[in-house]
Length: 411
Image 1 (tube, one colour):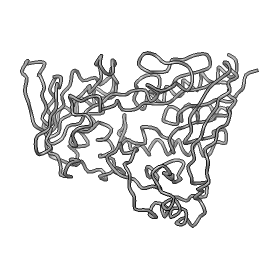
Image 2: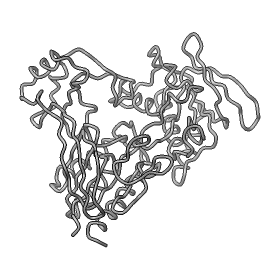
Image 3: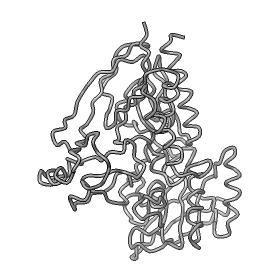
Image 4: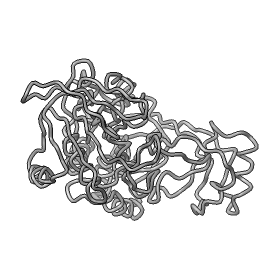
């Protein structure tokens, strides 16, 4: 007999959608998420397509649905260690890391103020800092602080505990391993930005004023490190001449073989971020602009901006002058002319890589690029399956939920 419970590995937009669609049809669903929060990459965006909404717009509705549905069990700061069994009857071993903060937390922030030490913020891709006790963003769910025991001394941990008047800090919190019995598994492990340090010819990770598209997204976000103000990381000044380098590592046999689908649209969105509040000149170097379907209207409207210069050409190299200004070497594909041009700031449109690329897949198997392949009772969703935008990610989550239900009912 098949087990009617469903495991969703990953609590991003695809995983949340899959979990809710199944739970609202009466199925017990477990969401196992490695981060301290749900929402995945969407929560790190300033705005997302198609309506350029802030991430809280769509996510807070989903979080309310989770709160109101007892069929959804959320397990954060956890990972799947192993899967055994067969379609309809899987035994899944899960390990959950200690959070050191229990359900009594009111997110008042007193714990964060208890220590002065700051470390690089993973949520901001290293563009900002966070404390030893922290919440990643204002609409974090679960809305509960996390303690960074790895970077905190015993005295700092004690100070954080003493600062909490709600007895929410538990320094004796231990990691735990437990089993889940489920009938189907949805793998919605999402994506990660391609490792920019591999793009040495483009200055990836070398020059302060060469940033990735996701770092730029965090700069543009009101809850980001600069409160939404676009600044040069080197000196905090407003950049008045900005370049975007498309396909940074993508469509390249030495890096990512495939097109990541969203990078062109993301850069055009970033152009709008800039031009909304600045008179800056923007140049986009591209191989070809891919804006499928309805997004072509967005491209047409954006490229009408007189401050935007679109150049079809592959960027070969980026170096830095003595003042930290990136100098871009590019060959114009239409004229054949090779030139150098200096900018205040360069944004690398790095591609989407599956989050599990190079890691052990939590369930099922992967293709040569690291994307999850559907198997018996194991269904891939969202960007674990292929590069997708948020709208198509949600559709993928719904489809995965329906397949999971068909699995557990034996159809």
